[in-house]
Image (tube, rainbow, N blue to C red; front, side, top):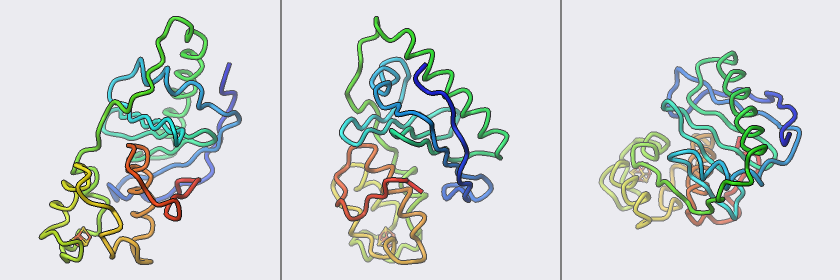
Length: 187
Ligand code: SF4
């Protein structure tokens, strides 16, 4: 067994969908060695080997595994979060038990969608970034034709929670993020 237990430590509003919640759970064991094996058997993961994160997309929800904690986004309530964490724990341990014949996959298999990015931008279309709309900026970000730091408003106090989640997503997808903007707890 690789992962013995988990504990929900923070519950926050979900930034992508105000009707849902975002959940952070601390975990009892380091789990990053299983990430390339999960990346090999699951479709649509975003794996960042240098950053030791794996984002799993399932039923429109996002689960990001870190070496020491897990974040869940677009969650209905704590009951659903517990069910997903149990599913993830079983998946991690079952995959760990049968990992020998699996060829580990170290590639970043999936790219972010512009709409995923757009929902986390301020949405004011202020044009400070040089684009006419936030959606146009999101498209440039996805295409790696722009740096997130060009969106000045995102770095203001008002949008700090959105900024944290967006930077975490971009970082997990392999975008270069200045180290001063990275938050090791993702919350
Ligand atoms: S600077 Fe940010 S808020 Fe303003 S238009 Fe660009 S992406 Fe939108």
